[in-house]
Image 1 (cartoon, helix red, strand yellow):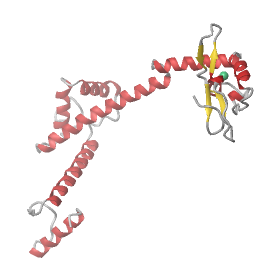
Image 2: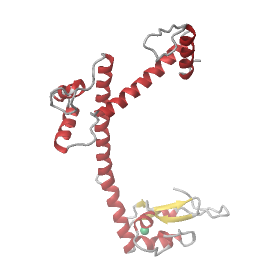
Image 3: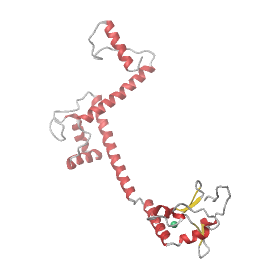
Image 4: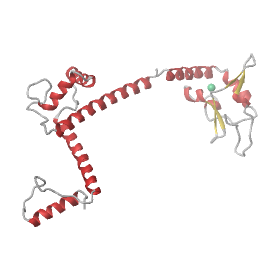
Length: 246
Ligand SMILES: [Zn+2]
């Protein structure tokens, strides 16, 4: 609760923040907010929820007459507009706490969908890693689930569908909703292989840089036209430079 003051640094009473009820009980006027930048007080709910143009300084440009603020605040809090806006604010606050606002629901749905795709991708990446590590072919002659000769990757998907709820749901969506983007086609497979290869290359270069000595086997390493000793040396040197190794 900020003590109001004016441009000259004069301070004023904070009594207007508190309301005394008929049973003498005191409660905060939590809808009153003070701007330290503007030296003014505002009615939060009227400022946010009012419809149309501002009807008073409290719901508009702000109130700063500290000698009359208590009278003004008392008038304001029993006005119909204020009571309507206060109810809207309370209602919104309650729904926010209960996660019942439209934004919340949409946000939750978005989060759920994002998590779903993340889980699908994690599995596909794991499959790509497995097939690459074991030197297994990815694709068959056809790229459709549950068809003969559709390759190892789709075969693993079919097998996982029996056990894994994420893949089960993914296959269900592909079959029932005809998903155009399903991350099972050859383009995404190639992209994932390239990304993994890049990461592996980075890791190897890091290890080589850390090592004091290392050797190179020039076998199936690069396309070489000049197979003389100098030719092999030059092309190796060029490749090491391009990898940032030298
Ligand atoms: Zn108000």
